[in-house]
Length: 129
Image (cartoon, rainbow, N blue to C red; front, side, top):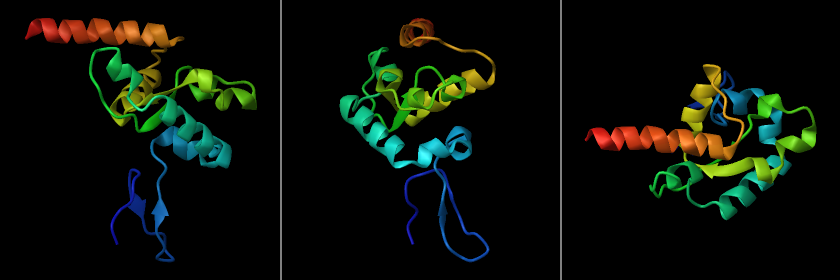
């Protein structure tokens, strides 16, 4: 049987396939497995078919993830989790990169802050070549 999208599939002891939903946040937060999240994610990816983070550096990459600008871990109300104003289309690489910065305690409060950071980093990288 071919593997489906997602990180990895593991066989539980009963022999059935169990699909992983992605990174640790997706595995630990049950809201990522709700019908409301799947509808929100689909709407965001329809609105943002290209990764907004790559686009700010002039790179066209297909968006495959719905990325919370302000991390979902900082929400106080349930409705904030599904607020499409705080979610953008992102490629897997950019979504993972943002999560790694958050894990290191580096947070960006707005989309503009992250885009400015990416542009500076991209400019430094391209000016060295």
